[in-house]
Length: 89
Image 1 (spheres, one colour):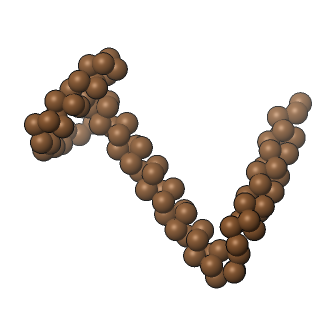
Image 2 (cartoon, rainbow, N blue to C red):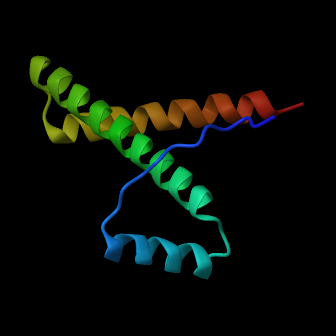
Image 3 (tube, helix red, strand yellow):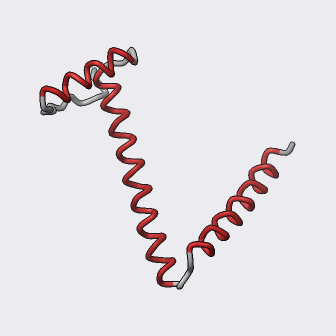
């Protein structure tokens, strides 16, 4: 029994040719290529939403770009310390 669902997709002829060429060049099926493209789309959409929300928060808190960069760097350092500590035996 299939675990995936089949959908129909319309593409302009030039785009369909390009999809076929890329799939062939990468030794992938068209389905694999389009699944990966959709995963990338979702990731980009999520990042855009995060950026948009971050800008709203920064504006509300009257943060400048330098403030945001400093906060992000501090958060990364903290996360790295926790990661390293968690990996120690």
